[in-house]
Length: 109
Image 1 (spheres, rainbow, N blue to C red):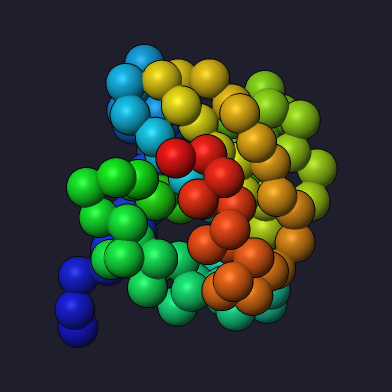
Image 2: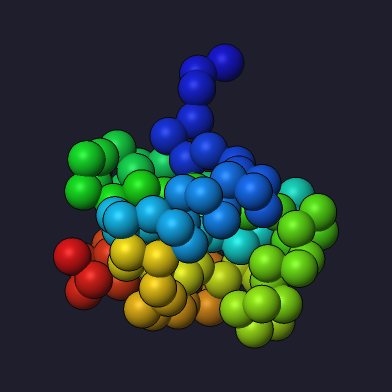
């Protein structure tokens, strides 16, 4: 099995690396049981490779880290949220095709 380009992070990692981070991070709020979440996983893997060194892409589990979702008003999954220097600067809800997710990332570079 190959290592993922899109690591799963915990609440403490989210606080340390996203909220207190200095870079640009795309956070995918997902759940293992969510079909649309599974559909976008290969797209996020590809984009993580494509934007390596420019944007970090991470996943956070909606079931085990519900407090993080509540803090940011995430009501449906998949939800992707872009963070710049710890601040939320954009949100995309629902499964999107490659071109839409790439455009969402590029808009925030």
